[in-house]
Length: 116
Length: 114
Image (cartoon, rainbow over all chains, first blue to last red; front, side):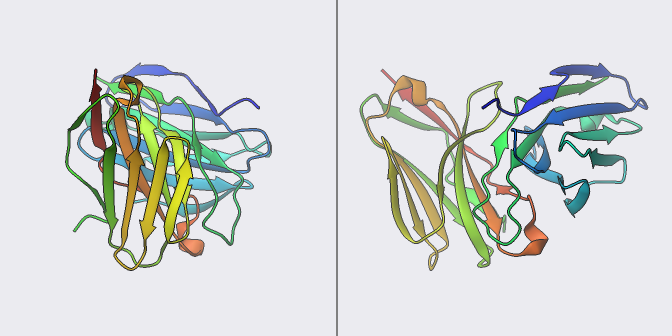
């Protein structure tokens, strides 16, 4: 089974621009979670989508948004980029079982975003 | 208090030794616990998951969970230089408000020297 894929792998943008990142989950997985990883803050949860609906959201400003398509692929968008948005953006997919905590997440390779 | 705390590193062990990685969590509603390994410049890779009190073994890895003490650990037996990486402890709450959300510790850097 193919793993989680993310595109692009690297991005360089300037302040004020916007960016869109893409994530394709493992076949059969319906849940996609997004995380931001920085040296100072570690891995922080952005949001989660399941069946095209955002079910959960972390403590990030509204500049961070996402969506999910009917084939479970997901995109996240960051508008009005700031220097502090430079990070590794990771998506993780899981089956998306609603009632249990045993749903295991598998990470993609990440997108390295640099904001100049 | 951080939600998930890991023993401060870096941790250095000789090849063949046992490496012990520890993690405590503050939320008693936490239900699921995961250990991920992250090599420099790579994404996290799942090593173990554990949901019930006690030990769970998988090859050279053993995860231990004690919900009463809010403590989870990972033991790596016969450590190899290829085990050198950052180990991340992740915790998931029960219930709908936790959909898709893992809370991570800051990670422990492990170095296995020949």
